[in-house]
Amino acid sequence: EVQLVESGGGLVQPGGSLRLSCAASGFTFSSYDMHWVRQATGKGLEWVSAIGTAGDTYYPGSVKGRFTISRENAKNSLYLQMNSLRAGDTAVYYCARALRDTSGTLDYWGQGTLVTVSS
Amino acid sequence: EIVLTQSPATLSLSPGERATLSCRASQSVSISLAWYQQKPGQAPRLLIYDASNRATGIPARFSGSGSGTDFTLTINSLEPEDFAVYYCQQRINWPYTFGQGTKLEIK
Image (spheres, rainbow over the protein chains, first blue to last red):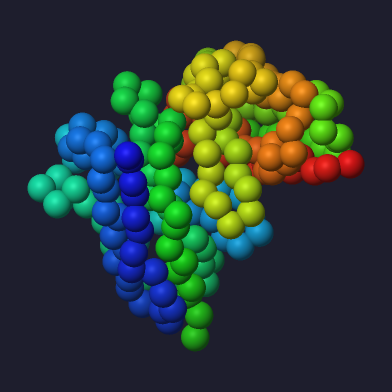
């Protein structure tokens, strides 16, 4: 059974940093592109970052230069390092797996971890 | 960035009726469009990918159609568990983007 479990969320002050983790199981982690998507309370979904099987990374303009996605295949783990956090980064952050051969279609999602940026 | 506009924002229907949800892209996404369902307090669930392919385990009452800039998600004979928020999403250009969602509520 495919499972994705996020951790590392919490309360952080503006300008602070946080590192999110996603533990994957039930599939060959190294063979799949992985993504982070966030959702502010009561709002829609926003892509945060993506990482390919070769380690290629992608970010939207809203987080580029502040967030870094990485993976550690030996530990079946995905990470999101978030720096210079702003109030607008407050959201539930989801880790998600992309379908093989259709990267960008997310077939499994974790339950999310809440990040709150506030003083 | 490709903008996806979903309509209507809210759709009020009764169980047993058919739901038709629309998604329009600001430029062509070919067939690189997916649909997700999200219930309160839950992560999104993939329903349809590449415009018309049902994801694993998705009931046949869910179907998708369209290409280019206009797409439709149809849910035949609504079940009580289908009332949720639905999002479309494109993957042809980075950054991938989602529509703002359509809330399907019980009438």
